[in-house]
Image (cartoon, rainbow, N blue to C red; front, side):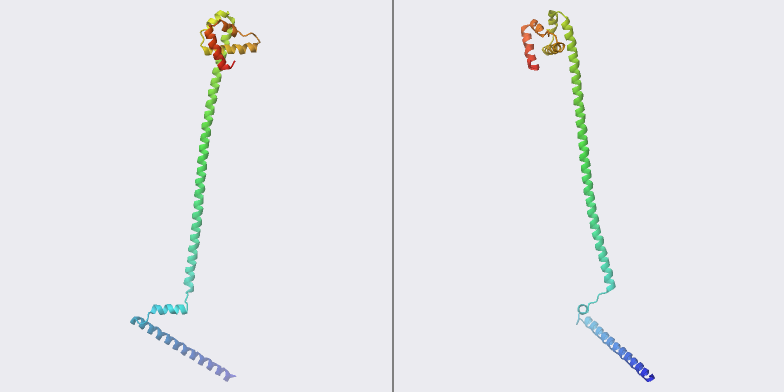
Length: 215
């Protein structure tokens, strides 16, 4: 048993020596080849870079750690670029929405201004109508008061006053006298007053009355 162990130990040592010699021999061959290639490259007989490229094509060499780091940097840069594009798009969308909102606000303000102007115009027209209505009512009240005075006078005296009216006032007086007589269920004095006016004046007043009131 001891002899067998010694034999195995000696065999293992012999194999180690053989492997060391083989490695030394291979290293020496590689050193000689490298030195020869270097001299050939110096002398211009061989292009050392082309030999290295050929060797890399035959036995591709990829430095895993450095390439992995570069690949990671490239991926990070690509992610950052994509994020920047997305942020730029969002910024453009926000700016477009902001412009649309500003445009709508401007439209709304313009419409509000137009409504205010229109409301002011309506108020002015209403004031004008109210003022006209008030003047008309005041004029009607004055004419009605004058009619009451004329009715209390003798016809010839009333006609002398009526002759001093202009045609428009005379037409309005006669028209209001007709309305009041109908409301009060009494006889109108228009026919009596017309009969005592000069014929030309009476005809002119009747013609204007027809044109204005249609009667």
